[in-house]
Length: 117
Length: 117
Image (spheres, rainbow over the protein chains, first blue to last red):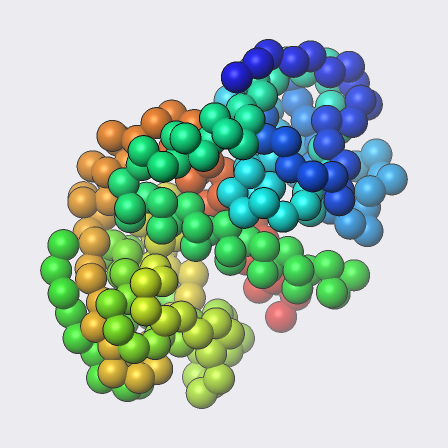
């Protein structure tokens, strides 16, 4: 796990990037932009301190489905895929199942949403 | 945790019900119906053995956002909210954060989807 700082407007990851882990926001706010809204200044979702971004890519090895940019100056804790997978392997089977099912359903709904744009 | 059996067509839970836990499907298949499709015979999602239903209500105490009906005869393992919360409390903080964020995003996307119907 590693602390990283981004300036306002700086890209944390782009849609289509390989997943390199998740980010826990330590301070500041991050904008999330879905396809169809990638060059907008108005994020689809704005996330702040203690919230997590990039969790989807970590869970199922697919590519990033959204772009994340620093909305203000932000500090994040980067949890690599290896860190995350080790934690998940030590987790109860029901919790692991819930993580898997939430991830699958979210990706299905996002795909339908992209299809509607 | 308790094993329960449902006959084809029998309701496991209805949209708007208080959440009474999640269900791990042990055998058979379950149809999930979102608002706008509640009286249909064609489920929005069909889930089978080893998959989980009802996880949303367990995580954040809101009411069921979909109806689940047995699609064939099904056996499920019912994990109560108390069982689940005990498991979650024993789980690593990053995993807990991921469960929370996946749950929030899914609910946001489902709300938008309902708004489009």
